[in-house]
Image (cartoon, rainbow, N blue to C red; front, side):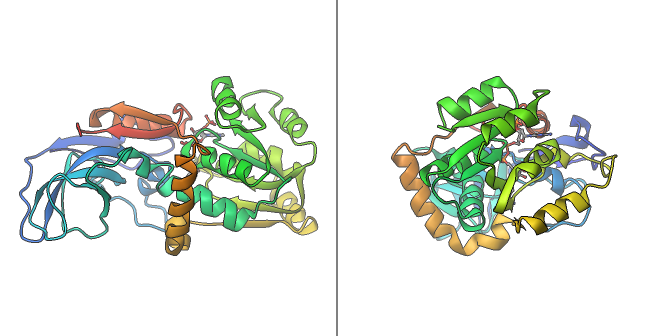
Length: 337
Ligand code: NDP
C-alpha cells in the first residue's frame, strides 16, 4: 500500500518536498469493514488549504497524515453486509492505494458505471459547485452576460455551459489560446479571453459590450480587477474560489482597493456571496444529480478530464493544477479497474 503523506507545510507554492511517499502492507478488513482499492483519485485546488494550518472551514491534514482527497474505488474485500466485492464506490480515501473503511460516507456507483471517474468532476463535487453557485446565487436570466474564469476546469466549464443553457451570453477567461479555443469551439462559450495577454482588461471589456451581470469568481487577482469596472447594477457574484491567491504568503502590495470594491458594491447594489458547496448545499444534491446527469446524457454539457497514471505523479500534478498547467479536471488513475 503506497500513500502520500504531508511531510511539511508549504510556504508559498507547494513543492514535492512537502510530500513523502510511504509504503506499508495491505490491511485486512475486520467485521463490519471493507477494503477499498483506489482506482481514481481527484486532485482539487482546496487541497492547498488543507496543507496549511491557517483557520478554515475544515481542519488541516496533520503532518505525517495521508493527503486527503475524493476517490473512486472498488471493494476488493468485504466484511460489511451492505457492500460486496467488485462494487464501485465514491469515497474519501485520500492519496493512497488502499483504505479500510467502515462504510460511512461511501456512495455506491453500481456494478458497472459507464464513466466512474466522472463522479469526481462534472457529476460530482465540482459540477455540483458550478450548478448551485450559478443557479442559486448567480440567478441567471436569458440575455444576461456571465463571465467565468478557470473556464476549462471542471467548475468553470460547467458554469459556462449551464449559463448557455439558461440563455446567457457567456464569456470565459482562461490561460492560453488552446484553452480559449476549447471554451468557444467545444464548450460553446460566446468568447474566451486569455488572462496572460498584456491587454487582457481591454479585451474583456470588448467582449462584454453590455457589461457583466454575473461574475462567477474562481480566481480573484487581476481577473477580478478587470471585471470590477464592468459590473452592472444588480450584478451577482457567486464567490466560489480565489485560486490565484492560494499560494500567497501576504497581502498584495499597492494602494488599498477595498474602498473601490465597497463603493462599487454599494452604488451598483451588487450581491457578492461566498459559499462552500458541501456545507451550504448538501441538502440539494438531488436536483443537481437529476439535471446534470440528464444534460450530460443529452450532450448539452461537455466534460474534459486530464487523467495521469500512477500515484507517484500526484504531487507534481497537484502543483501543476495550482499553476494552471492542467487542461481539464485533474484525475490520477491509481490502479487498474
Ligand atoms: P481548475 O481545474 O479550474 O484549476 C484551477 C485553474 O485556475 C487553473 O487550471 C488555472 O486555469 C486557473 N488559475 C490558476 N492560477 C490563476 C491565476 N493566477 N489567474 C487566473 N487563473 C488562474 O479547478 P476547479 O474547477 O476544480 O476549481 C475552480 C475554483 O473553484 C477554484 O478556485 C476552487 O478552489 C473553487 N472551488 C470551490 C468550491 C466551493 O465549495 N466554494 C468547490 C470546488 C471548487 P487557467 O490556466 O485557465 O487560468
